[in-house]
Length: 148
Image (tube, rainbow, N blue to C red):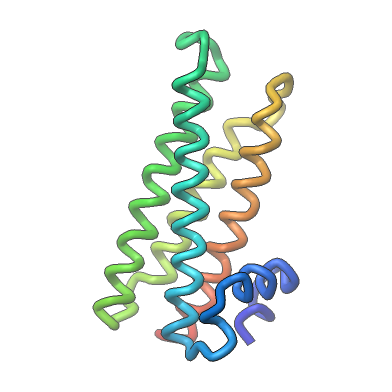
């Protein structure tokens, strides 16, 4: 039911069932699974970008500015997902879908900064991570709407 409300049913099912809590999860527990997956993805993406920045040889280069922008975007995305956890814990669910949307928008902003840029192998890796994160956020939104 949740995955039918996302743009990529297969990704949704595979993502949710990568967690052993999913088979017996009620919507509330499924929300925890989805937000946990999104949080892990966001933090690993943020950390990957931070590592690229630490290893960058040119702090004034254009690609460095793009990475700084993406790092800021992912710091905001992680913060939004953390706020989502708090909303989930409060059992009010007032902002769950909004916060997941904000996090997804942050990944979209990062992705937009790469448009038309080539020449750096990590662009495709970040693009892949952005795509997965946006998919996970979409799952979070779908589950949040069940709880509202």
